Figure 1: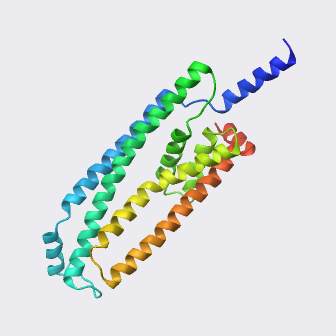
Figure 2 (figure 1 turned 180 degrees about the vertical axis):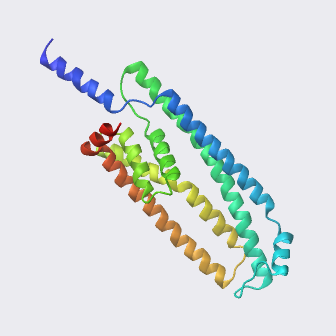
Figure 3 (figure 1 turned 30 degrees about the vertical axis):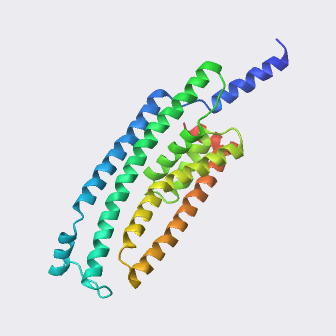
Length: 241
């Protein structure tokens, strides 16, 4: 056997060792987790939206449970109702998107695995890995700079080139912002019904916060993906396993 053939086999073997599809068991577990969490979010949002009632909020204002020195009673009732209803709707939409993400993740990973089994060519699912990275970011949201972790996972699984991994990390960051964008968008939209000076300030503050949050999550996810595809990071990760 020539050295060229040996070198080619070594390259193929190393490539397969570097980026093989996840196991079916892990795919099922991740998909089930996303669907379960999505169902919980959807149910909670549905109940919260149903709990929003103008008469109930009016009774809170009349009894003094909710007060404001900047709004009239009618404006306060509208604003509080909009916040409750908007939060419920945003949670419901987030739940639906998580369920869809779980189903999509399983589909993309299954297709990547079938391609690998049929051809032996390693072709990681960019979208599937991005969804997984986004899920890691959301789950680890209590950890400082969690998008770096999610981006690192997606970049590590989609490694092969810096551009491919970084693109996957950016996608993971965008996917992770979807629940945040949904919550902000629905709450802002619901608040627009009570057009007061204070409401305008709140909406403007929320809009600026949203832009900062999206930039933060996408930027750190890209950084994490770059680190995840970097050789030294990959070696350290492999040694830890």
